[in-house]
Image: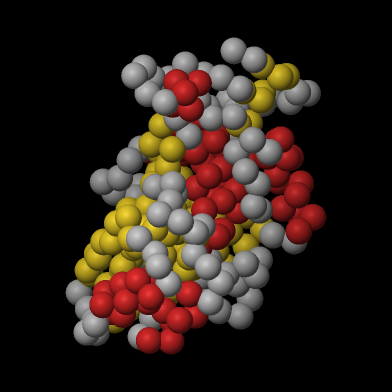
Length: 236
């Protein structure tokens, strides 16, 4: 295992035996700012993905920490990793160590709350992005081991997103023909749908569509034109 030490309580890890009968990345673990693949790398990835799912002009972020995240977030650097993630840092970016300073320079306020988010994975955080001119946006996710994550809620809509394929997220009030419309546009542009899943909550629907290749320019707008969406986001 190669270890690069820095002048801080963190270390840069380039190996961490975690599993057997897996890919080389599962066995060796992610390249990351440590000390923990679950509490640091996973937390940073949740913050990074959450940032990509919301509007960028937020000026304040609240982190609601559940379970193990709540108990160990200072010792394991989960707090710094989450802040680094919402600033756009990747898990191997050593700026995570000083993420509080970067957030202060960017004028972004942040606060941490220990809470109970219910029957969820112990490494779970709800991130609330606040804006000067609009209502807050929320993303909830869990770090499930070895740097892997799953996003479980967006603005209260339940989803299941593992951040390993180009993915469309569409929320809308109950209306006919949305799946047919989205499928038709993707077929028109030659896309293969890896997975499509709908999650209903009363009259609200969240449609998650994973693709086998990145979305080309203009496709998202073509999808937007056909139906009334309350939330539409693509992460490549």
